[in-house]
Length: 602
Ligand code: F6R
Image 1 (tube, rainbow, N blue to C red):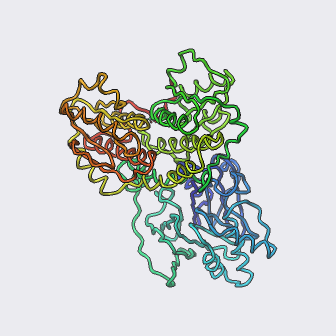
Image 2 (tube, helix red, strand yellow):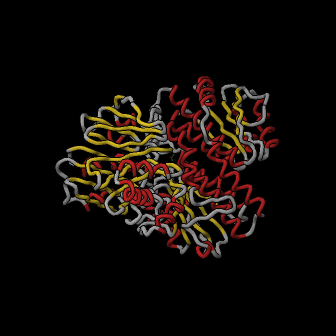
Image 3 (cartoon, helix red, strand yellow):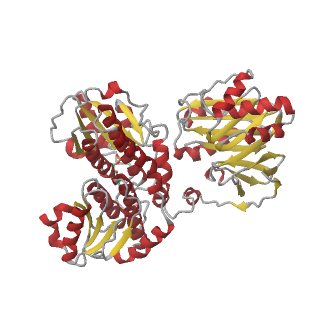
């Protein structure tokens, strides 16, 4: 996702920009660029792919003396990741970088084109720089032109603009996308989050929506709809790791809270009110596919397992899921016309990668659902759908699982509509539920507080059973995995209907059962399974939209109109439960003992 850095002052500007962009790398991007004006001369460089490519391109360039500089990492939304579409965007004598989406860019572009302006890129951002230069022709005053430019923009933006007509100035504006200004004496920095300027600036001002202005000669002039505005700087933390956590105690906690937002990124450009679309796939690729085989490990395996219910139920296509390390050595029978799907957050998991190579050797078409572009699994697969969760730092996977599950749900509905196995009404219902998913993922403060309070009752005992049926069985597996990874307590996920075939022998008041009881899928069935456990005095934490008197603890959910909405809401609850238990036990939530984020050995 895009990132912005800016600097005005006498220091070496290229290094400041590249260094700052490096700090934003974790957000994910597919191209980058910088523009610098010094000595009234404009220099700019852009490169597709990693920042190393940009660093290579600029290796013989060094800035010297006073100047202004802006840089950007771009994560493509309008137009492909090409050098032309990378920021900064040039007019004739000005450069702009921008995060967000200009919603009315097409009408602004049409107007400018009618006035003879030529556009080079497919981006919404380029409109800003042309609009500015168009205004400059009438105003002869750069700030007035900038002000008029931003007054015409609709949508979300954080933007920086530099221009040869005011070579000592950076113009800025913020509305809906984050941006801040850093100060160190006369040196002024800009960035879309504080990590690029930690260690450089001593004080900071976080811009509010609707604010704009310019920086010049060590001073910032700030304006909003009421005119010029005084502002209060605050001191800036010097601790990078804590700044990256944005005030959360752990990366895992931050990543749980991010799920609502990243889910919208996962769906962006792939869904509208009538249809689902994957530019990564075409109908020819899926032509003739008669079965699906999915291989993955750990959390990714749970996401795969959940999707197998959807592929069979909606797309009516047989779907088998296997743990990659098991698959590798079982001498599997692979039938042609089977689509081989791998799921991986890192794209580097050795067992999953090897399973993929086996499937390819057997001549199967391969598709991966992955969070890391250019990873080994992405490179090895015929096709890749990126989950767009952004970098996941907590070892215990959260947002990667959520976005994997969403992509697979979308894929199952996409295949169902290609095969004609669902009606228009069902298709609409699925899409409607997808669109509501970000809401179901919002962590409500009261809920978090409640889970924090009740977690103190779950720190001992002789183990946990997470139980669910259907889609909620893989979720039970995932809930149990989260808990054991970070609390080191024993937890098992189990199909609720299986309990009476053995595990119920363990039931007593020291056996903690986390019961996932959705309203929209087999409620009566799971209810009677939980009643059986309650009758044997197991301690029960029920998670359900339906009041359940036999529970010792009860968390009521809200979104019960679709099983997947229930799934995602309950997923967040199980994640927070694991987090709070682990914190109470004093464990390192982000780096649990014995675990690594990327498992590159078999
Ligand atoms: C658990 C977890 C692991 C991974 C597994 C596969 O929280 O993160 O179980 O899911 O190691 O990793 P990826 O998805 O990178 O292939």
